[in-house]
Amino acid sequence: MTTTILEPAPGLRGVTGEPWAGVQYFSTWRVGGVSTAPRDSLNLGAHVGDDPAAVRENRQRLRRALPGAPFWLEQVHGTDVCDADAPPDGSGRPGGLPRADAAVTVRRDRPLVIMTADCLPVVLADEAGSVLGVAHAGWRGLAAGVLESTLDAMRRRAPQARHWRAWIGPGIGPQAFQVGPEVRAAFLDRDPGFDRFFAAEVKRADGARWLADLAGLAHARLQQAGVARVEDSGECTWARADRYFSHRRDLGSGRQATLAWLT
Image 1 (cartoon, rainbow, N blue to C red):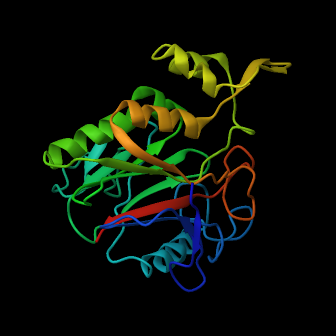
Image 2 (cartoon, rainbow, N blue to C red):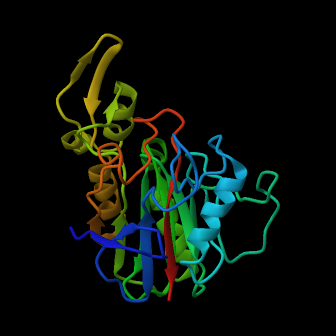
């Protein structure tokens, strides 16, 4: 596990992982923007009640760190994958954003983006850097197969691609992610061995809870799908209020972004 702190643009900070031939990628921190509390300061989410002018300015600051315009999605906790290279098909909501929780591309310098505030952002590519995918993996999408759907779409776009690799970006850590029995069942129904990612039961007045290792579940699902090399950032959004927005920690939280592009 390697986490590198970087400054993708003046005033902005973020994290990335190990060097990756043909791929650039990073997750933003919450600092370096103009939004005010409780979304201070680099909130990139336009759907969380922030001042639209502040979000526009924050996105413009992010844009200066990128080789092209970011490809935004309307994320809905599903498994649909958008081909970022295809002409728009009109399936997005007003505003033109595709409704999907993953995107793929084979074009160079086309930044794909996933927004999160506890869910996992996952970057996927082959070792040769010929095809790229990003996915939004909260527990619902992860259990339903968003990572497998992303890989399927990547294999269709680049049938020659081999030797898959993934980076799991900042998300809520296993010490903070309490889940109910329906979440545990959603994963154990697929593989009873996934019980190892759920810590001892937490007793609460409103029912039983388990501490879930979301990144561990994502890692296991990726390996089952044929991804040999998986790196985890190890960054917990809930624990690091100085770096990340967290929906579970802060009501009305902003959103950070994970960006990736082929070079």
